[in-house]
Length: 395
Image (cartoon, rainbow, N blue to C red):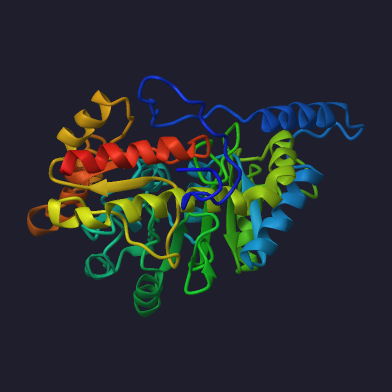
């Protein structure tokens, strides 16, 4: 592949130097590019020497919130300290109280269930589609009871959840939708931005996310002014930001850092290019792996609609053998969720008995998925080498 003609090319990338031995490809490479390291130093100095001397929830955070709201097309964005706390705030904002049930996918990250338990709710695990690995709307609706307060569809790896179907059944059943778009900033479905489909949504800025940064942070998005205002109070110990030490409800500390706000603001114009580069790598993988379906490799769904580009995960019943083959050739890979959430010791009490405990799509997703390198530090030659080694396994 050449830098000028590569089908992977969508944004500037470093070209690897020629070597006499096969190039290794680490799964993750989180080192900041030199320009971003310098930017971080500049922003740190700027905030540290600013006469205002405000290090949390200052004017940079407010400007970041405004600009992200404009980009997503929502009325309000509230910056928070982490994706996990953002999910807690969103659940509380829609009225989840102790004893309420919240439907979450059985395949996914631990905070999906832990945040529900943290506020006294009961996680109810819905099955996922075995191909897309996101919440199955039919199974999710079948688990609605009179105690259900909310449903939390989570976009996973490279695929947005079926938001039209999920929001439709939520309206029918009178429950709230908390859209976990932590991994999906920049993605759209039917022309509508990820994170804006539900009553409330969120993005994460954890370092490995599509618009990640060198630290924790997230934002909550909503078109509902009352929900956004409540989140704004809850993130700051229940204070309204006008009068200190007057607490309108019991909140928590989920305040955003001004240095990181300045850093994200300075990079915001590059966000689309960063996401496009990841999308181009995924598209190249898809083109190389299309012919392998008959050999037992299932690549993610193609096309831009409803696609996000956080983790590129293929599926195969030969998952462990493929991972070993890749490792033998110096290619990193990762299994994210080898055990479904309801089978983890932490959540086993909520797995559900009998038929409720059977989630075949989730079991398949856990057993078959394998993530390949997908990050901004990958060179074209590393992408090509990864694809070559995968294809060689199935020859």
